[in-house]
View 1: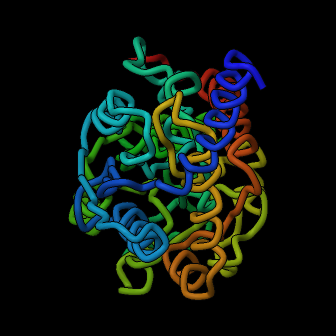
View 2: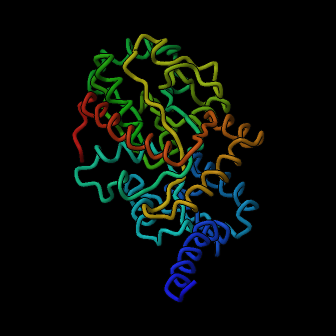
View 3: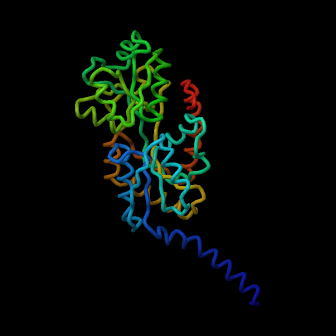
Length: 322
């Protein structure tokens, strides 16, 4: 072999060895999991549970960084600006990221281009809840009580899904209920209990916890069929409102451009963590069903699909970008 061929062969061999080595040496430092929620919130608990499950698989220290605010834009921008090497991971609702592309006039990040979904974690649906002190036992009861109130009716919202659900319910039921924004679902409970607030659109973990404590009555869930995690809660479809089907889902995301071997490794680790009995039990306890996508490509395809579908639902609800 002459010198030129020897150099070419050596270069090709080095390239071939680099790809698997990239995944084998990952992670090479501590890993940060970014939460767009307040510490202690129900959604933040999902981030912390999954990150702790990944710690022994990664063999590194894992850190949860809370960066709440601006409808998750602060956390999203922070992750997008990080080096695409798999050491900074956003765990967030992909459905909320998709909705923000249409709820914001000028989204700071094009999530379909700037983020890579590596693995899904669960599927969940927000719930319509009223105070346990109120007499309403069904969506029909609530609708009948809200119609005479007109614009004096009100509902709690604290996430993009809350806003969309509230407006879809207004439109479907012919109501004029006014949205009252809160930082967290918990911030609305005093108003709900006092009657200053009529109802709210709550994440399932919070709603089920409040129901268990005897403070809330859940009237409907925005899923196409009853959730296995909350089989006693009827759907909006069962309540005669077929237009309110909004499935949310959590996933792990990394900056676009993260090497494929690392993305694939994360997909395998997260899927392994989600498939464990204690993870399934935890996810059911917070009102969601485990959801595993076999590949990062499928997770990303679902994100892109949701961006389109949430755009249609937001236009249908008549919500103007802010």
